[in-house]
Length: 206
Image (cartoon, rainbow, N blue to C red; front, side, top):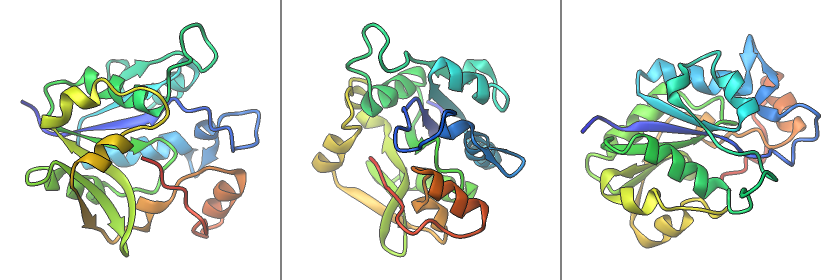
């Protein structure tokens, strides 16, 4: 069995971000929102798999090998009505079934530090579910131990892993990383991040 794998979710529509170009493709520093997220995962030296639609997979392919990308249908394509965050998690977990655990990280969280990923991964040695928290507030990534494989691999719809979080005890891992709370939901969020201001109302999803 290998160590924990980071599952980066990059298949969402990003409907709250009012732009013709997907939020994950938006420029951020010398890269893109997704590129910055992947750079931090790479810096952690943890293995990863990115779950993305075809258009986003092309962006991900600039940073990681195509073997580490799972392509899923765009919302609206034939048979995609049951897709959602749960389905994306299931695809990522199913692509790395021999891992000792999986850390779920949304692709629009470009400020999560490598040491935060490692802290949550380490916690899975003792806890079934662990998540990063900053000053007592739940954030990402959320880690799941190998014993939850069968349940993770059959998730579907938009509920994500909330059912598992309600059923099993989850351990918060306090980190000195406000990036664990920061996602890019709107254009204002991205503008604030570019100007060095932490978005005031981070949206945390599970």
